[in-house]
Image (cartoon, rainbow, N blue to C red; front, top):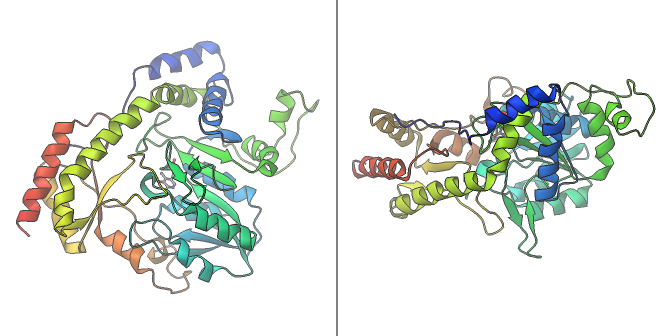
Length: 383
Ligand SMILES: *Cc1c(COP(=O)(O)O)cnc(C)c1O
């Protein structure tokens, strides 16, 4: 069986976890946490990074930092993971779902303007499959309407946006006011199963981010010697991960370039072998716009209809290949459909019915990609 995903060990994970134990500091914000956070700040130029226990937690911190009032509106794509919406909903905001683009599942920037009301406070672009949303357009709209932008960069580690107007290349997660990343075991790198990162780009949020992170206390300032005692100063929760998880993540970060290179080689092989079938119109391949780069997080196909996708997944399974669909539209979910304003989001529903993800993980072999593509070719020959 070729699994859809298998977590990859780079070799030093257990060694570093042992070191964390020997250091005698097991709770959060220890040596490994600081090394990981510094890594992101140095490599990507992010202003302030804080490790979190999950991408969901990083999104929750973003939502708390937006300081929303009941009835404030947040624009979110419907084709995304539950956490993107949940983080804002639990802050009392009204979630306004937006449709995806025809060319790829990302938020349609052209459709945002029509959703803005006097209550709109935040736009949340999700960089699906690690491919940038149209951030020039989104930031321009946000600036004009004085809105915050929170990037759900959960899938977007080591991927970039290149501005067509200025040519400037900037890492995803670093363009909005705040960003969230995930190190869940299904992402390109993992913090031992669960983990995340809050990225603060707007300096106004740094102090409060540290306080929310440390259960509403000014403990971080105390340890820096900035205040002589610490206490309860704000809202907060326990968002910081244990050192064991940071140690695991550090081993993965040390091998990030190797991981990315291997994933891209597999992704490119899929693209090359499946392009002829896409050209014949059997399905749509992943689209990387001129303003985006590829971090090889997901390789997906968009089938022509639900029936063909169902049959393709079944056919692959019969040939010992595990392929999976992805999101169910959040606006039509059991939990939200009665709260949704009734607008149809046809592109989002199309991806819900027709998108299929193929196996992609570090330890997958090029020969396995070839076998998967051959199997898909045989399937198409029977259509
Ligand atoms: C994975 C993911 C999340 C949640 O991250 P966790 O670390 O699993 O909590 C949120 N948004 C998107 C788009 C994701 O892919």
